[in-house]
Amino acid sequence: MVITQTPVRISFLGGGTDYPDYFLRHGGATLAASINQYTIVTVHPLTRFADHELRIHYSRVEAVKTVDEICHPSARECLRFLGIERGVEIHYVTNLPARTGLGSSSSATVGLLHALHAFKNQMVSRERLAAEAVHVEQQLIKERVGCQDQYACAFGGLRHLEFLTDGTVRVSPVILAPARLRALNDRLLLLYTGIQRHAHDILEEQIERTAGGLNTQQLDRLKTFVGQGMEVLTGSGDLAQFGALLHESWLIKRGLSSKISSPGIDDAYARARQAGAIGGKLLGAGGGGFLLLYSEPEHHQSIKRALPELRAIDFSFEDIGSQTIFYRP
Image (cartoon, rainbow, N blue to C red; front, side, top):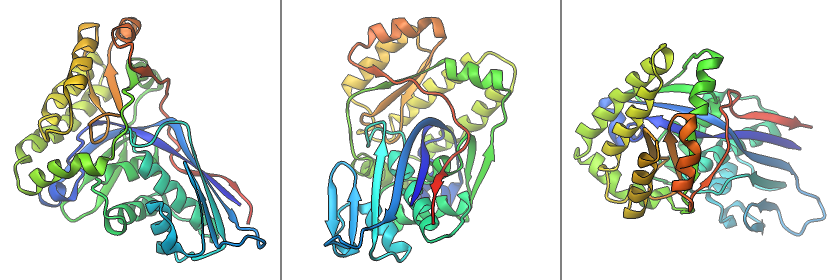
């Protein structure tokens, strides 16, 4: 039996520049951090008394005889990719709802690949896990996804991710003093809008505009915010500048596609700003999911009162990334 634990992530700046349609021509960069909310994946041998060959547990249970019959796209393609055709049972467990902008689908893919490699008695690097997860999601499942989630979830920690024009991904830690990192954590609010959406559907218009060059100027600007954000975080100045960068970035990002925001989300964000938030953004592709806000801690309660329809989720940063927490050959 193998059990892996893989974090989800918060993307701060540069989102959209991690899509191949952009970075293979211009180079991309993002700033992201993993948090202490996880996808737990268990893989163990299927009992020999079962009348099926594969069993997958998530929001439903699939018991099938062949890999091709599996409906769960990530489970199907990860098994196929690693050449496992029978004899395993897979369980997914997560604390937070899926399709909410935290990179949960990539967290699950990274975690499953990690578990399946261990099941085959293989030790693999975090870089390989991330690259394989990108391949599974983009090439095998044909999802419209970028490349930052897989690396952020596999490596963990606060990371500067660079996407080079030759397809290489460079992963660098952003080193902060513990007090500085706690100060950033203390100024962030994570609020659930209650809206679940498929990033694949939200991103169609954005990727078409990006491929056609219509978003290039905006994405170039979003990329510059990554360096500015790192300067603020690693410096000794007021962290409020980071909140201002989030706000400026959100104003640009919401213009990449008509599906990223909505009147309801715009209204909630405006109320948050009136109650003391300096900046923020919808996480992930947009359209719903989690709203990240930056404000001084003394304004957090007034922001929550101004947004009674949104549910606050406690979190803290983590720096471990995907790990095997149980292994019995």
